[in-house]
Length: 150
Ligand code: COA
Image (tube, rainbow, N blue to C red):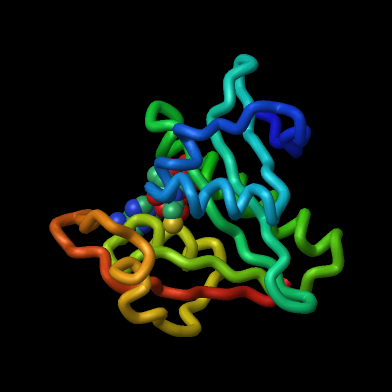
């Protein structure tokens, strides 16, 4: 498995990006503002993440996703580790990430990687998404914000 920056002229792995965020508008906006990295195995894209500069010395990791057949094999953790190293090498001091209140495994993964909860953006998913989102039998309403100093 190799992780590399997606050249700007290459087509986006849109289906994979949308598995992390159902809003095509938000996904395209994130990609325009940030740098998109992909994980490849057997010349197939199996993972993706986008790193966006947000405030001075702060970047946000968005749209992290791994194809279903490769999930649970450590690729998500490897992408997060790569994102932390990339952000650090570019001079960022803090990295942030956000996920839904219903995204139980994502909340577990991010905390296992060292992120700590900093706050809750209440009603984020009501404000930004037309369709209701349910995961693990829980309505996705609030965004849990996490961060890590790097
Ligand atoms: N309780 C405790 N730990 C849990 C858990 C739970 N309910 N669910 C998952 N985990 C842990 C696993 O045990 C593992 O940690 P470990 O290696 O210490 O055992 C870790 O989370 C998963 O790691 P990994 O295999 O690297 O993740 P992955 O390759 O499956 O990728 C996602 C994770 C989230 C990127 C992937 O599931 C995905 O693409 N999901 C769809 C898109 C998405 O939701 N993106 C995030 C948007 S916020």
